[in-house]
Amino acid sequence: MGAVFNHVGHCVADVDRARRFYEEVLGLEFWRDLEPPDEMTTQLLDLPEPAGLRAVYMRQGEFVLELLGFRGVGTTAPPRPRVMNEVGLTHISVSVDDIDATAAKAVEHGGSILEQTHVGLAVMIRDPDGQLIELLPMGYRASLPD
Image 1 (cartoon, rainbow, N blue to C red):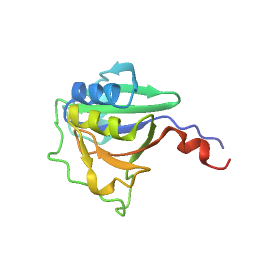
Image 2 (spheres, rainbow, N blue to C red):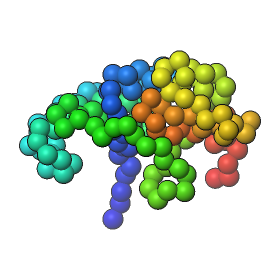
Image 3 (spheres, rainbow, N blue to C red):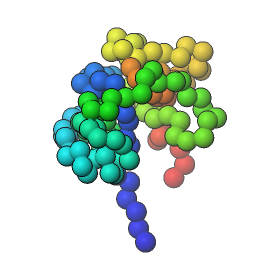
């Protein structure tokens, strides 16, 4: 039985703001915008009606990030900071040309830098909704064994 990775879903407070962040800071490209019917959405996502889901799909290579915004049921706010030893998905890791310049750009677009995590080779930032993102140098993946 085979499986193919599809996408990572990320609930955000403001889909347009999140789209700008991921485009401008990390270079993801807009792929598509989807507003599925509530009947299907609420059943699949186990949410009450009206959900009012708007899903914006961003991609970079084979990676797809689905930004989820809910006009009907809204989002739970504010997001609480997750820690790395909390069970569940912890962070997104991205290789960039310039760690410090990318981190500074994240701040310009509503994110933040976790200065205490800057170890020279890597740093953690948060997007405007608090999602942890690890920034690594572009050559990091090439340095790993096959």
